[in-house]
Image (cartoon, rainbow, N blue to C red; front, side, top):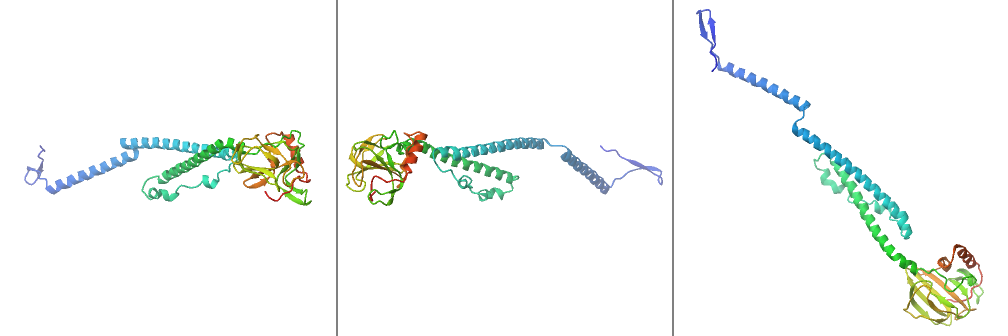
Amino acid sequence: MSKIKYYYDTETCKYERVKVKKRDVVINALGFLSLAMVLAVGIIVVLSNYFESPKETALIKENGELKLYYDIMQEQLTGMDGMLDVLQEKDDHVYRTVFEAEPIPNTVREAGSGGVLKYRNLLESDLNNKDLVVGTLEKIDRIKKKMYIQTKSYDELLDLAKNKEDYYAAMPAIQPVSNKELRRLSSGFGRRTDPILKVKKMHYGADFSAERGTPIYATADGKVTRARKDFSGLGHHIKIDHGFGFETMYGHMSQFTVKIGQVVKRGDIIGYVGNTGKSTAPHLHYEVHVNGKPVNPVYYFYKDLDAKEFEEILRLSSIENQSLGSYSNR
């Protein structure tokens, strides 16, 4: 209960009761409320600027942890990217070299995966640090693309590895007749004097002089695709398809020991030296074709010759002498 206040009236020489007007009460109340609001706002400003609320403290802690995890993820992504670069380097310059495969072009390895348009919605959003998020997503996409290309490359190399043994078995790698002393190579690949026409002509193989009946060997695994008895040109001759683009031809034979469609292995006897067709002496005319084109057979005599012997037979094959056969049909 509020106290009743009095004042001394000098005119009446009495104590009179103080009468408070409602306006004064309202003014006093508004003044108090205004002061209270100013104080409250000041307190709030001070607290917000110099003191952290529990919620803000929790958010700051959470942001710090997220920043730490983000830095760790960036470091790991950079490490993964570096590891992929090392794998690509080995793939192009080691593994593919071993298997004689072409390196994967950088234009394929570095190809994009959608570009900026892929993240248009994200870039147009109101998300804070959206550039940071987009940059991370682009980095992840690049790594995923590299991993995909590398996986496909390893699949290809695996197929090449599986076929490598078959490839080497199909490559003509030995001499077609026994030639331990290297004396039987009488004429090599290149322009040689035709023994009948006495003019320079292209000689598409190598001639091995040998006695009639000398065994002739298949120089690689394959299938006989021709066993023809002619009395001109190559005379009695055999053609073997070895696969992988390799074919060999054996001419001027006396007889065959194989037939068309027969599968042979390297070193199998396929016939014997003769003097059939346009031949001036018993010998074997031997050709190697790669993807349909004749090549120097001497380059493939690596399996039964050491380095010194290979140099010698290469020297002998380069002598521009007279071939032992003349023919126009091949």
